[in-house]
Length: 268
Ligand code: NAD
Image (cartoon, rainbow, N blue to C red; front, side):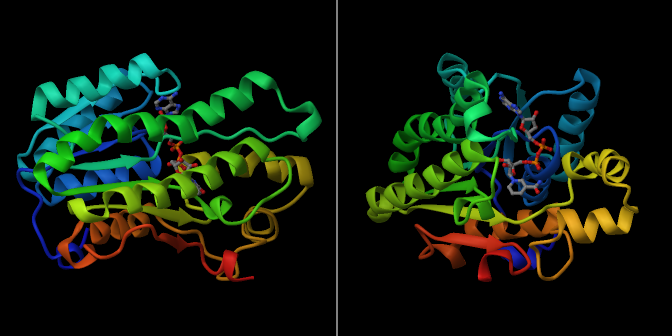
């Protein structure tokens, strides 16, 4: 990760990244730990693999890395995670709300429990982490709140009603945060990726090849990247670089923004 991009070291600061045991969240954790921040990682997965990642994060700069494996669809568990972070580090300076899930179905068939889970994780959890993080940030007169929103915070696709609703809500919530926190040295912004190359995306390819009788290239270009003009996947490192920039002093006047990294998707 480029140190020149943020131009600063985050030693002494603590970053909590939700949903950071894989994909984009893990890339944020690596980027911030690499520049000296203590990190709190969260999410599900194999215990040994998570411990290996946690130890690897500490090795990057010598700062601390804490794993908090709470289920963020539940308010009491979000409160427990934020308390663990406060007990370990005093509070959270950089909050990245990244945990998210997807379900694809027509509205009239959309399972009610899936709708509720997606709204709880992709939207409500950001409200709870933010309300619990803000008092410490205000005391420190510095803070950064970043949401991994999505191109779907700006535009819709069929069959993704809960996801699109949650991500649009997250974008609106972030604007409100920005206005409320503007005079406290705290910024709040969305990063909105298009298709990012994560295991989540990669794992869809073999099934889609079989289902549609397509080659790997056809699936990537004509299905996954159909709406992404560059015909390139965004990388997790590119998304993490944007987060580093938003955390830097150079970005102190960027607040309430929705930063697209989508290969031109939402320009159409
Ligand atoms: P991912 O599946 O690799 O990561 C999701 C993370 O969330 C994992 O660490 C997982 O364990 C965690 N998680 C899932 N349910 C949880 C729960 N109940 N409580 C706590 N943690 C939970 O996916 P990703 O692609 O890295 O996605 C991360 C974020 O980026 C999501 O908000 C997603 O909507 C957004 N996003 C992804 C893409 C993409 O193309 N991959 C594009 C735009 C936005």
